[in-house]
Image (cartoon, rainbow over the protein chains, first blue to last red):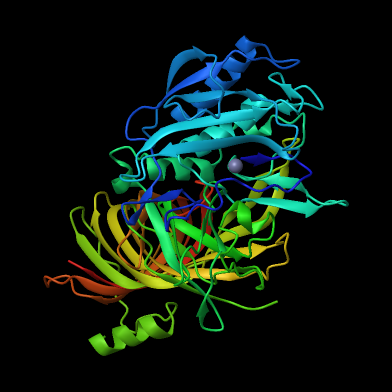
Amino acid sequence: MIRSTSIALVCALSAWQAQPAFAYIKFGVPAGGRTVTLKWSQTPRYFVTTDTVPGVSAADFQGAVARAFATWEAVPTSTIAYQLAGTTSARPTEDDGSSVLGFLDRPDLDRVLAATDFVIDVTTGALIESDIFFNSAFQWSTAGEASRFDLQSIALHEIGHFSGLGHSALGETELREGGGRRVIAAQAVMFPIAYAAGSTEGRTLKADDIAGITDIYPTSDVNATLGSISGRVTKDGQPVLGAHVVAFDPSDGSMVGGFTLNNQGSFSIGSLSPGPHIVRVEPLDDADTDSFFSATARVELNFRVMFVDRVIVVPRGGDSGSVAIAVIGK
Amino acid sequence: MTRRRAVAALAVALAVRASAVRAQPVIVPGRLEIGIGPQWTGHAALGSRNANETTGAGSPFTLFSSSTDLASATGLEARIGVRVLRRLEAEVVGSYATPSLVIQTSADSESAPGVAAKERLRQFTIHGAAVWYVPARRAGARTAPFVTAGVGYLRHVHEKDVLLAGGTVYEAGAGIKQLLVSRDRRRLKGVGVRADVRAVARAKGVAPDGGTHVSPAVTASLFVRF
Ligand SMILES: [Zn+2]
């Protein structure tokens, strides 16, 4: 689910259990008494509806969606691929075994631009179906028109969910009068709040998105060529849940984020380029925490932003070794 | 001059003349020279990089800034040279040092205090060099000024034996050799000290910008000539 610019929304996926995993959050689903990573085991086939909205023809819609799928497919370190199965008259929220993308008129969801849902085999955790709807209560464009949301950008975000990715926290926002948040800047397509209408900046995957999709669908050489940073965040000696940990690579300026996801305060950021990195830790305060974690999770927000005071070296094909980070209350 | 005096001369000053005054022996091609001594290399600024996010208009928003330096370090340098012409020597030079990689963060958009994050590296170089002995009338018979230039391989390794990066090292400079002991009829033909000052250009290696960065380097060494 992606939020419109000004408004805070509930992410339908946030109630799902977060998987202790690399980078971003990838979805974990309970199945057979354990938590398994939500991912496709075969090439997912998707249908598109032929419904139209003002400014977006059926061909425009199919073209924008196809470009968004192709953008994820083009990640060289990931094997993910998708297949267009054709057009359909089915609605994108029907649990019919077919993955459908299309418009849906949901004026009641006045803060939801689009959303992705899943049908999962609860015994095996296998992903059976995933639908994406785009809320036709908003104004859409495939040509970057001002005051209209860019369909390709929003599709790129939702297809990230469709593929098993959760939200990234690599973005800065400010509160708006009357509620909601405005995006100042972001460095992940999977940031939960969209750019303002008219922007097409969300059409390009960033390092964090690439690390995420690589982690779920790695090519065979990834384990030997990329590396990871792992560690633990504590405050007053106690583990911190929900700290946003960012690995910055000074060789190319890229950033990949991760979270402390368990009761030990552990984090692991994977699919990183080998070499020296700077690690920065911040509280999860640029979006509602339920965009990332279950509403009942006790996410720690009361600590200062800080850098780790040593260079963390990512070995090729290995892990940095545990990095101990002690944060300080505000 | 005794061996003890020779070592002392290296430690104190290279300008000290040996007390024995004999004519500089003619060094014939094929003569071998082996030297070893400390090397100091100055710091190199390896570039800066911002941690940028992207605004909806496509412009960068700087989350924080970083600049990377390779700190100055003292290490060890060893060389073996062979005289190929009367005034020209070819050398193979190896060096080892442990400079710190320092990444300074600053200007954090959320006021995180900047840090100078450090990590010790191991730096190996091996390069070939040419040494040209400059004719100098005023130099004493045992004193030989020279210019030198070379090129070779640079390797930066993390303390945990993780190869960070390879690169190229270029060096150019000048120096002086002072022969302390000369024994024409022995197998060991001489003992002396050498000092040189060079500009060292390190290309790639751990430099985040992948560029070439120049540092000063000073070497003092003791050599033996066969
Ligand atoms: Zn979303």
